Structures are given as C-alpha cells and as structure tokens.
Length: 446
Image (tube, rainbow, N blue to C red; front, side):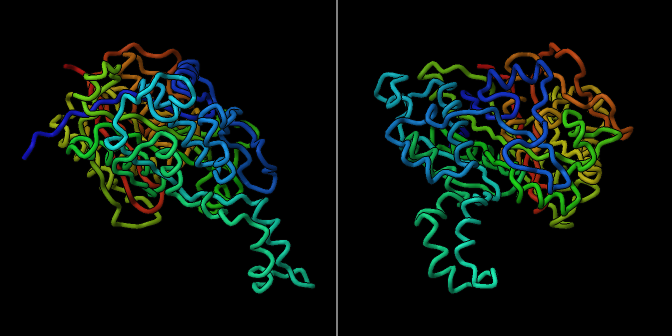
C-alpha cells in the first residue's frame, strides 16, 4: 500500500457576522466583537427569538468574474455565502484559478491543475425565497382564497422561473464554486446539518491523502437567518427566546445561565493541499491536518446520547488516525451548542477522552460571538483553530466568563493568550440526526 500523503492547509476563507475574510474575522475575535443583534433582514416580531448573527453587507460581483454574473439570479443566500468564502480561500492560498485570472487579479496560466482540484462542501436545508414563493402561491388561490392545486399547476408555477428549483438544491453550493474556479476533480456535497463542515473537510483530507486530488476546497456554508430556519429550532425549544433585549449576551456556550442557541448566517471554505504540491508552488502553509474521525449517535436521532458516546468515538478516531495521543494536544475547540442537554453530552465526551489532561489545555469557541451557522459552523471553528496554531495566539471566547460548574474548559477571557500550540482538535456534530466528526490539526514541521 502506498504511503499516505501529508495534507496541509494553505488557504482560509470565511464569511461571518464579525467579518468577511480571514483577516477581518480574526481581528474580530481578538477584539471580542459580537455579531449578534436584532434581525434586520426581515421583521422577526412574530418569532419567539428575534436576534441572530447577520453578515455585513457585500456585493457578490466582487467575488465572481463578469462572465458569471448572469448566474446570480439562480443563487440562494446559501450559495452566495459559499461563493464568497471560496473566493477568499482561493486568494488566501495564492491559487490562480479560472475566476482569479478572469478577474485580472493574477496572471495566467492557472497554477493548479483543474483535473486535480476537488471540492467537498457541506450544505444545510436551503430555505426557499418566501417572498418569491408566496407571490406565486397567491396566484393559485380559488374564489374563497384557498389554495387550489389545479390552479397551482396551471397558473401558480408559471409565476416562478423555470430554473427556480436550482436555487435551493444543496449540491448547488459545490456546483457554483467548482464552475467558478474550474475544479474538476472529485466533488461531493455533505448534508449532515451542523456536522457537515467537519465531514466535508475530513473527506477532502482523505481524497488528497490517497492521491485522488492534489488540492481540495472544502468546508460549508448556510444561512440560518430566515423565518423557516429560525422557526424549526424554536419549535424544538433550542433557541434562546429570553434575551431579545440583550442580543450580545444571547449565545453563552457552557455557561451556568445559558438559555439556548442563536441562529446565524455564515460559513467557511478552506484549501487543503498535498504537501508536495504546496512545496512545489512555494505556498504559505498554515498547519497540517493529520487526523479525522467520525461517529454516529445510535441512541436517538433527535436527542444527544447523555454519555456522549458518538462524540467519544469521533475524538478517539481522529487522535488515532493522526498517530497522536492526548498528551500532545494543547488546544481543544468544542462545538458548544449552548443548550443544556447538548452541552452536557459534549462535556461527558471530552471528560472521557481527555480525563485530567483537559485541565491543562486551552479551549476555543466562536459560538458566543457568532451563534450557530448551521452547516458552516464547523469550517469557521476549524479556521479559527488553524489560525491559533499559526499565530501562536488563542483568542478570547466571548460570553464564557460564567461557566457551568460541570464545564472544565479553559476558555481564554479578556485579552488573547500567547501560546505555542503543537496540536489542536476541533469537534462538530449535528444537533439532530446523530452525525459527528473531529479533526486533528498539527503545527506544520518539515
């Protein structure tokens, strides 16, 4: 069997409520900015939770070539987030892809072989444009203003563009990203809710390590700031409905007074690259991805296993896959759901895997600053963890100053912490559905 190729991280691209692009996001973490506020993109007054994390304004034309701008009309919010993240990741990695060359931002020819450039992108439940859909539905009402299926087939549907459905298929995030950047190697879409990003990055890691691609763009993106996406977790009683008046304190992971999760827009895509390929083009290397593990909650599809066994499995597999031990890990990045049952289950898993070692390592969470970005959450966490290794700096974790007595995480408070992190592990899992995944990252050494 051929030796496994080493895989490194050469590009990071994020879109978050505290900054678009890695530099803005990292600076936001260091300055303890919070991106959660009252929802502005629609009237939230009919919802029990009226706060969320929304992105700063941006123009999609700044991230695609002119030749592709007609396609914007068939892009949902989730797709645009992925396209923005992809642009930032590719530029950050110094890749001269089709998009970058056509925009006149790099000389041709491309410095990556498109047939060896793959993609693995996580997606969630892409919400339909409710205004667009409601307009079409209104033309399908009968004389008593009731929905009429015959009128919908004859008149209502004709008020939607023939390509309407293409805006809302989860694989369309990867579709547009791969077309814009001409990535022709293996492409995959992962739809496992909040676990999607970790699973997508793990699959890209496997694709490169076994030799089926030299470069992969991977991660996830999702918009959770819309009425449907906020109504679902509210019905599950997982959203914080008690802090509408104090949005910047609404997301408090592992806190004694936590009251639930907060929805958010955002995502992240990263560039993974075979070490030999990165060296050949003299790329900057952030860190090395060395281990990947996954698990599944077989106890319940809707509630976490109180013992955290599916999370234990993912963590243990990632450590073993990297040929490492917990004694070498200096930083942990828990998923931090901020709901009592999920936080308790996750804490059980970390306790089981790390034991007394957990008291000696630092912890990092972005959830207090951002809320939950759905399928994009894991990639944002991963990017923050990678930067902590690369910068030898652990940023403060917002809203973690009042920990639950059961929490043993050593989140940084106040100013950032200077620390040389040798290895870190990032965990992600779906709040419903049962998937989990962990990624072990090493400081790069020749």
